[in-house]
Image (tube, rainbow, N blue to C red):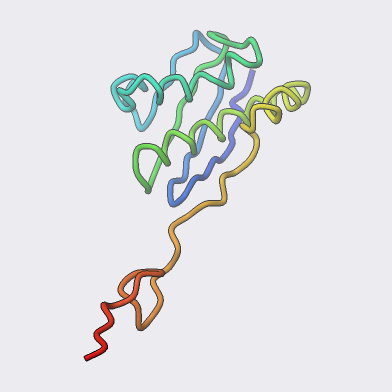
Length: 128
């Protein structure tokens, strides 16, 4: 089987995911996923799409992630994996959509406004 490519985004993180048939090895930026994402919750998020679709250990993942923080990168890779699984088999989509894995999270940092300290915070007001 050929490689299936997909893209996942979250905040400012962008993940390019390549899925190929294999033994279930997940590689992120040339490193093992357990080394790159050491927290158990992050590892659960990476494997969540495979568990929902009963494809654990069937595909190797090679992901390249750029930008953002660790949490944003994990969610970007997770979205990329889910999109790639749907490209391979469209019957996976209802399961993944029910768990909200097919939705790109639109929340991002609000921009700073002029005349303010941050996006909404104001400078201290002094009456006298």
